[in-house]
Length: 224
Ligand code: Z5A
Image 1 (spheres, rainbow, N blue to C red):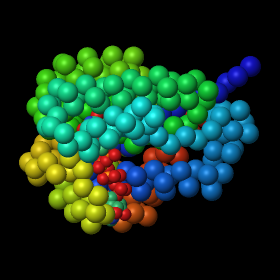
Image 2: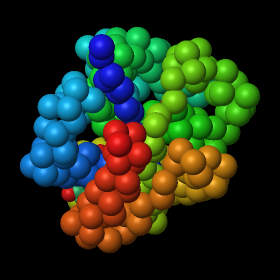
Image 3: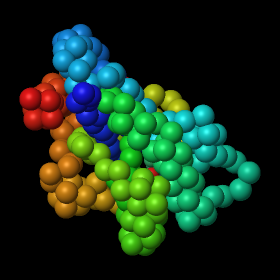
Image 4: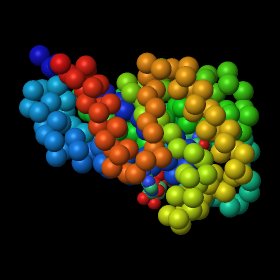
């Protein structure tokens, strides 16, 4: 009898908080420490998967391009919200649900809290509308663990600027990104069982160490 149980770990935070970097660190640690191999051998996990929103599917990559790099006309806030929801619906049905059903341990760069923080706190769209759309897009699928990489907005934007890729969201005002940050803070306070804060102002290795400790604790609980 199969006892595999997939799990979804989400990384969230403001621009340049280090999600991409830390997903790579965590993946490497999970592989090199033998943690995943041990769970695979024990028949508890099928594989390790990394994915992201927007852009975790082929269609999602086209939506991502529209969202972040389209220059034809200004995207209205509700249009933006619907495009993120469409990307998510495709991702949940095509990647997350099948992966979890198959027993995968999934590391996902952004999920529903990003919509609450960016479109809700950032753009000022109605919270009830966003909750409803998140529900439609996910069918109620929540993360098992969300790591909020908490860094000062100015530090995050400076890191992103130094990296040198500029998208539409990145060019939004400092006040916009500060409202987004406030959003993540309030969400972490509202959902302490699901969202765990990580001090992302430290150097990469120190951030990775915090994340490993949190994930190790959760793995022990999920796969005793
Ligand atoms: N968005 C939305 O509005 N609504 C939604 O529902 C969803 C998304 C799902 C694209 O997301 C945009 O979509 C995003 C929110 C919006 N826009 N914004 N702003 P994304 O996740 O693909 O893009 P991003 O937030 O712009 O991620 P990013 O810029 O790639 O940042 P990151 O992945 O968090 O950081 P990083 O690439 O790992 O690191 C950035 C640089 O900092 C890099 O040069 C690193 O080497 C450096 N770095 C990383 N960690 C450190 C530490 N600890 N110290 C020093 N330097 C570091």
